[in-house]
Structure formats: C-alpha cells, structure tokens
Length: 517
Image 1 (cartoon, one colour):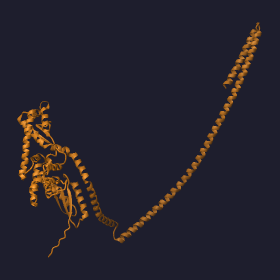
Image 2 (cartoon, rainbow, N blue to C red; image 1 turned 180 degrees about the horizontal axis):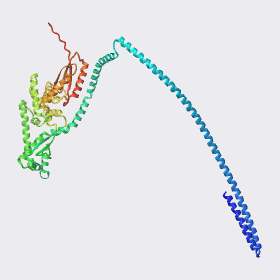
Image 3 (cartoon, helix red, strand yellow; image 1 turned 120 degrees about the vertical axis):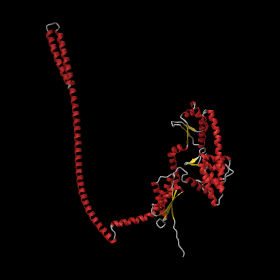
Image 4 (spheres, rainbow, N blue to C red; image 1 turned 90 degrees about the vertical axis):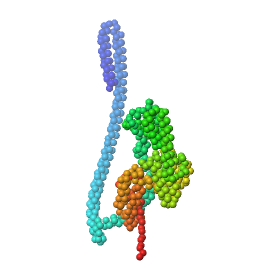
C-alpha cells in the first residue's frame, strides 16, 4: 500500500512539473531562448514519463508481491483453523464417550447398592434366627446341665484358676531363678545410685568436727595476718578449716578421723594458750601428735589387756587403737570389735574351739577400717593384707575375709566371728536406730506375714533383716511357697520403710507323728 501511495505522489509531482513547465514555456515564448526551453520541457516530460513508468512498474510488482503474501497468510490461517476444528471435534467425541462410560458406571453402582442392601437385610434376618436358635440351645443346655449360664461361668473360672495356680507358682520360681543371675549386677547399680544420692549427707555428718570458740574475735586470731596461721594449721594437720558466719565455732573437715582429732586438740590447746603464730602451731601440733599416738597405744593395749590377747605387733596395736576414732553408723569401731571378740570367745568356749584365737579373730575382723581412708580397697581386703603383713594366723585371716561373705569360711571360728559381727551390729541401740523403731519394725514384719493365707507362724530375726515364715503344709505346697514368699516381699516393699534389705524365707515342713500305746 505504501508503494501505491508513493506512485500516486510521483504522478502528482509529474503533473505539477508539467504545469510548471507550461508556465515556463509560455513565459519564454516571447524570448529568444524559447527553443531551448521547449527542448528542456520536452526533455523534462520524457524524464517525468520515464520516472512515472518506473514507479508504476515497481508499484505493480510490490502490489503483486503483497497479494501473494496475503494469500499465503490467509491459507495458513485457514489450515490452523481447520486443525483447531479437528481437535475440538476429537475432544467432543472423547467427552461423549467418557460421559457414556460414567453413566454406565453409575448404573452399575446403583445395581450393586441395591444388591448390597438386599443381602444386608438377608444377613440381619439370618442373625435374628441364629440368636433365637442360640438362646434355645443355651436354655436347653442349662436345663440338661442343671447350671445357669452365670453358675457355669463361675465354675469354669474356678477350675481354670485351680489349674493355673501351680503354673503361676512354677513361672514365678523360674523368673526368680533368672533374676538371681542378674541380682549382682543390679545390686551394684542400686548401690552406686544410692551412694550418688546420699553421699553428700553422709560426708557432712561423718567428715567434720566442730570446735567451739570463746568468742568470735578468736576467728581473726586463728586466721592470722594475711592468713598465715590458718595456712600453717592446714599444712601441718592435713585438715581443712572452715570459718564462716557460724557464731563462736569453726569446722574441721577431713576424711581421716585421726587427723581431725589431732587438729581439734591442737586448736583447743592454742586457744587456751593464747599464743597463736606459725612457730607455736608447729610446736603444739608435734606435742599433740605424740600425745595422741601415746593415747592410741593406750587404747590398743587396753583392748588387748581386757581380752587377754598377747604377742601382737606394736604397729598392729596402734591400728587397733586407731579404731577408737572410727565409727560405723554411729557405732564406735573399737567398741564394736571388742564386743565381737567377747561374743566370739563365748561361742567358741561353748563349742569347744580355741577361745583366744576366736577373740583375736573377733578383735581384728574390722582392722582394715583403721586405714581404709588412706588405702584403696574395702576394709575386708585391707584388713586381710594387714593381717598377712603382721603374720597373723590363717584362721584369723580367713575370719577377716569371710565375715561379710566375700569368701567362704574355712573354719568354725570364721563362722563364729561372722555371727558375732551380726549380733553386735544388730543389737538394739548399737547403731543409729532407736529401740522403738526397731521393735515396731519387727512387729510390722511379723504382722504382714501373719496376715497372709496359709501362714502358721512367722519370726523376724537378725534385727529385722530376715523374716522366717512357717506355712501350713496341708494348705501350701512346695511350689506355692515361692508365690507366698514373693507376695510377702511385695507387701513389705509397699508397706514398710527400712534400711538395707530384708530376706524372706518360707519354710514348709511335714511332720508325721504317731504315738505308741
């Protein structure tokens, strides 16, 4: 289209050019140069016609080319429209088929629903018939058996309970046997857990000594200028001094009771003397150490003289005296050892054993407690090593090793020492437990056992550490006795609070007695 417009413009330009040429021709007709003008006009006309022809030819060619392009575009658009129409027809056909499929499926579902409802109705009718037949059969069975449904159920449960009674008891016995295999590991875990919970309380009660002061001004004198005095006391005694806001008192802290005693006497002597400085502290400490050592030897010699024991190494005598500063659950270790020695001698005398050896073993059975805070290991192993070092009798060594059941006793004297140790520790009032609590615990233990079925008698022995129960043999058999023991154990755990463990022993004895006349 632009070429056509351009061609028209060229034609108009040519016409204008001709008009102008005519005006020029008319103007120059009267002049002498008219011929030249005519020639120019003629030449201009020819050029104008030539330009016109060229532009017309180009316009025609361009118009033809545009026409071909437009026809090609129209043809392409027609093909696209035809393809779209074909796709729409195909989609419409697919939708018609899908609609028909859905209609068929809906019809099938309606038919299935109708069939299902019909079958459900039939099932309900059959269930009603079955319930009626079941009721008729139950009524007939109750009439034949002579028992109602409830009575028959109770009878069956009772029979099953009787049948399962022995199986349950046997199962408990087997489980207890398996538990015993794990008891050592479990007990160690419980002990560690208990020590973690109560270590702080035990340390506070057993590792400190309180020293009373005449006034709070004495605290400053004990501390000294720039802390010289307190550092000297801690260095020479090996004890920590705790000076806090507690009025007229300081605290000595150490795991070694022997060192605490020396430090206590040293500080009390310095307070009475009034001269507190590093040199004086060392002098008083040396004197106190010698006095305490002499007193320790006196404690040891007194115990040996009291028991009639001779030929004991002086170093061992000192260790025996050190037991005076050791306690176990509030019980003085030296007094406890003397009690065990006395009891061991009495029992050995009654049984015809060596009384002196029994007393010696009883006195030395806890000798490891004198230094167990200075050496690694239990007081049993430490005591046995000390006895070997000082060449004690093998019977004494075995009594030390076996009095807590760590090793098997190899002699009657070892058994006697273990019994005497239990008697001394379990004596009411010997350790931190009141007599009223002790008696009440024994009564509660026996009451729990006597409240169970099939129990004839019960006895709390070993200061409540063991409960022995005698059952009626005609009501409780051997297998059931395991269940009785477990029931009593569970009842004790639920009802009572007690230190350590309580052993429950169930005894079943059948006696056949006849009287000849």
